[in-house]
Image (cartoon, rainbow over all chains, first blue to last red; front, side):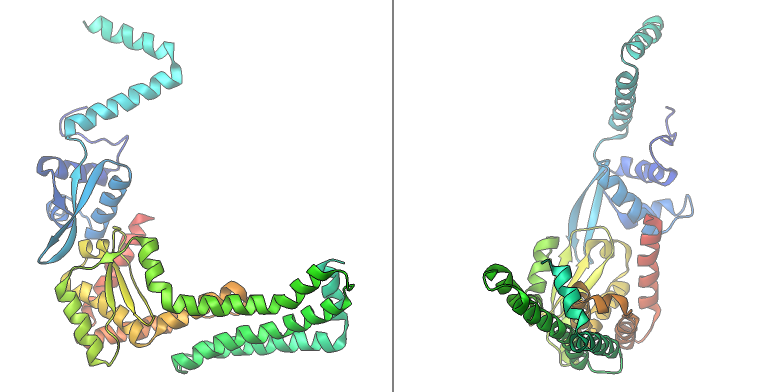
Length: 117
Length: 249
């Protein structure tokens, strides 16, 4: 997976964009993420809120509640940084292949990555 | 002799058949009248409960006439039949009373609501409630990203707002939503809604005669718009909430 690429197989384009904004800053409010994204693509604040809620439900991001002068807000932060997320994606994909194809998948990986060495 | 056979015997008697049809018609009329937006909330709620009471009349006659037909030794079935109208009437009355007094507490527990720590909003609600001579409702926060708000009429009225509203609405829009809910409480529309839902749970007539509650929403919007002096915030808040749910689908 290229640096700066999308995770189109796993995430929708907007989910991918939201995570890419969230990864470097670690903890952001919905409106802060929206403020960054609106310069890059056409998006509504409510759509960003839906995406973050969806990512939270899937366990990709965590959220806490911040009480400030302007009221209460959710603060979203990714559960894993980009590298850890990519690793977990690869691990899930590999596990799925092993579950589905068993010894065939294992011998293929052995052959493929054995050759590289 | 099963219940269906007893019902058929009951309905074969012209006096009981006309009593049943008459009661159903009166109940339908009362239900239809309770939908009239021009009536006061008290009258509408009275009509909804009168509708349920009228439906109990043929049930009581059925219970007593059928109970008389059963043999003397069939004590349990006789007692159950005689008690049926009282049990149903009691359940509805109890649900109504418990609902009125306990509904805010039940919602708080079920939804895990916490007291809303927002002094600005609390001050606004208190000021507006006093201005209109109403009871000051308590404000509760729901820990969900779905933008939602609702109010509950009770001896201690309450307004519930979700954290999701704070995420997507501006301060003025948030105030518009809270004022909209306060408008509901001023018009006591949650009481009508609760009574309607209760009637729909027990009455077959209420299920078949439609009734919309759009008027209540319009009244609550009018209240918020009048207090803010502009429809902008109510409209934009509604637009954002609707687009959230549209995108969610």
